[in-house]
Image (spheres, rainbow, N blue to C red):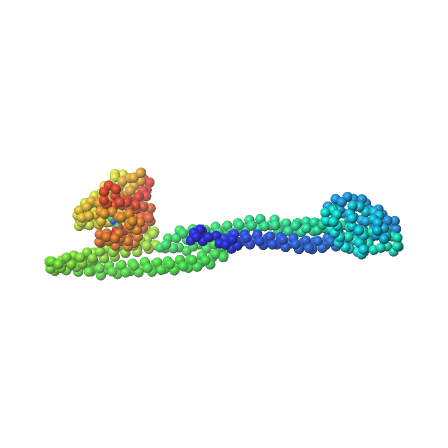
Length: 461
Ligand SMILES: Nc1ncnc2c1ncn2[C@@H]1O[C@H](COP(=O)(O)OP(=O)(O)O)[C@@H](O)[C@H]1O
Ligand SMILES: [Mg+2]
């Protein structure tokens, strides 16, 4: 599945683990910060409130206590609001007249009840005041004292403190996000490494994935995958063994049948029987060829084959051998096969048998699909400075639609001349790819026929 097919998930449940974790972390931090601030606002607010109340009472008592009433120190409204300074009022004994006040502009009357009260006044843009009204003195003519403090100042102070408490958590958020991001990145890096491991697996002999750099949480997945790989591997091995055994077991009786047919030939009466007999013989030859190809294929699939030792192979010598060995087939079909090599030696490092299977299969095809009496050319030359081998025939070529499939196992172009198994090109390509060769098939543009070109990885001289 590609990322686009999977979609991004709903916004509150994103597909990405990282985004999910980030969202949760942000929510959690914001929640914790708000909660801390709220608690501190309540707790600290309470503390400040009580402490300031006590101070107010002390100030009031300090004024009321002496016989000689002090005059409160003058201040401006600004100090009352911004610094929370106490405003002291001295009232006449009956509470009717304000004798003195540290800020006379404040119009809060003497409260009827002694003690603490909260008063709101419309003047000064709706301000709230905490008020302490002292008890009346023992003498009837004693002046009354009242102390006031701006309530908003108190709330502001608690709020500032609360915000300060929440700040560390808010500051921690980016750090936590960064750490989380790094951890998740590292984890997804190791996941990507595992994915790369999986991607680079050879489907015919998958190897175990390393658990070394995998996080513990993902280890079970990788373990299970390794388990699956082991089973796939053993299934492949079983299948390969079966094909190999079956082909091997079929070879002997087939060879025997071939011999019997040869012996029978002398006894076949002329006429229709000969025609039938020839068909029978061709069928047996074809079966023998198929068995050989199957055997070859199963050997090619075996992992041990991978380590087949390479050697320095002179391609010209190899091609001459291949052509001369296939001369029998060319003669049978009266095909004119020619080899053209350039003078400079071309050397490839690979097992000779594997290289032979590449060229044998291509030349075999050319000889089979060229018409009776046709022409096949094998050329070793350079194109754009690179060494190539061209195998050209004058057969029907391959329809463009089938071009992409001719390398598939058992695929034969519908209507192709009888005698093939559909395995030749698959075998050739596997061998070629394993040793850095590349096969390119192209219909000739200078007439009918196919050109099979093999690009060679030439060793530096
Ligand atoms: N030189 C060629 N000319 C025309 N068709 C070819 C040629 N080589 C291969 N093909 C087509 O590709 C198919 C696959 O080739 P191959 O894998 O060698 O199997 P086969 O055993 O049939 O030759 C053949 O069946 C044939 O249809
Ligand atoms: Mg073939």
